[in-house]
Length: 411
Image 1 (spheres, rainbow, N blue to C red):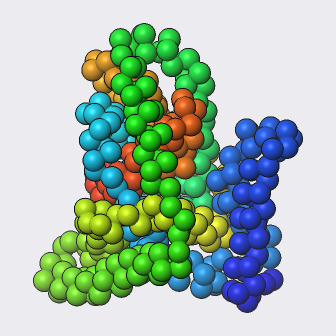
Image 2 (image 1 turned 120 degrees about the vertical axis):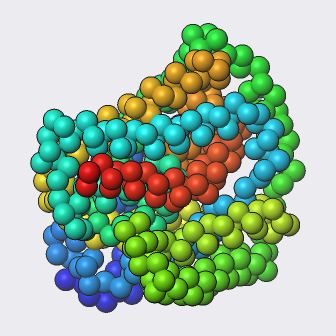
């Protein structure tokens, strides 16, 4: 067993490099492989194999505690700092409606799926303490409203057991990737779907032209000082968030102990909440220009390192322990889809906004940009913009969803 965390970190980075190299390789065999097995799943799965076979010990390693404490809040800042409110407004109300209705579908679908499966198979949703199923489902809510960073934030807030979280990661990734496959297939039939929705897709063409011009205008090669500024923004905000959380948490614990039931006395809840708020506030200042030198890309690097360290704690043997959880995931995503389709049909919202708004919730910035690019490469930015909004509200929306699921489970 490898016990030196420096060696383990090097191994994880080599694994991530190999995954990204093969996923971006033009080799036909690799393309067929990744068409079936999503790269994100491997980022969890391979480190999980290292832990499951005793090559590393994810429970005793200090990599995850350090990365979640320092890198995760900075990651949230990097994702939200580039929020371009002007560009979001140019998308028009239909884009934001589709995005927020998708969020509502996730917030309704989780408790509904938990309730339905609980009626049919109570043992599937049973569990107490750290093994309470609603705690694990809370992490999926964070992931499907925002992304991996929000998922990790809610994992730290609600503290599901490692075995339960392993099962939730499998449900999250597999169900989300299945849904993304449907959306990409729909992109090839967008004209026919728009006709059924009664939607006018001409505004999409105007957005394509505007984004092409904007991308060329904002192209910038980062200098060393830009990386220093990025570090100052990300880790400065992280430091401020920890400083304020250290004041808020003891105060609430002493004076309002009943808030512990709602996890409001969790220091990490306040760390991620404050860090996200600082990122949003910075997006309203000239600091937002750091996005042009790679803020969200650096955030993505942090996120994938975080994903690998999470995977390293997985016991893959536990994934098959409760297959009924996949029923919850399928009912959950189906509820999200039905609500979104009905509203888009009612308001005549183009399928492009439906697909990207949904994936900005369920898949995060990487998947949303992939779905958007399936319509046209220049539209990938739309997916990122909407996904950034998801990162901004993911922790809050996931937290509220978790409280409803807790109420259903304990009611």
